[in-house]
Image (cartoon, rainbow, N blue to C red; front, top):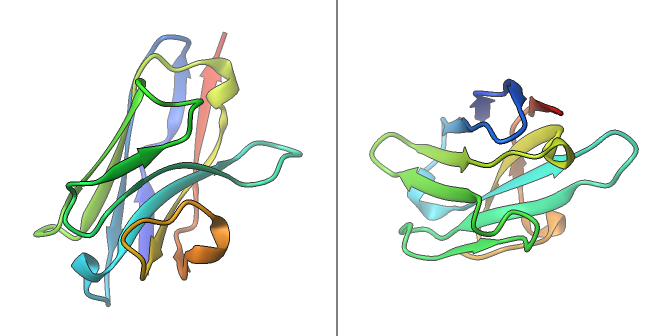
Length: 121
């Protein structure tokens, strides 16, 4: 089970940190990803972190603004979002993949329930 939290309303240029905790499985066995889905749009890849936390990948749209990290001792992955823009408004989902690095929806086996991030202009 994946439980995401930390969403909310923030002004343009602000910051938020999302958290996602895994229970019931061996967290360090999974690559962890963040995706987002805006109204009327498909779910899109935001970023991914490998098993050990040493490797990360980001979508071009968030590179340099968002940072993914993980704490394997706490079974938790984080998404630090800085310099937020209105186009970042979406429901954000965390997901777990048996692959260390995965950038597509189909590579992820487990999904959290999503947390809403709204960036006001």
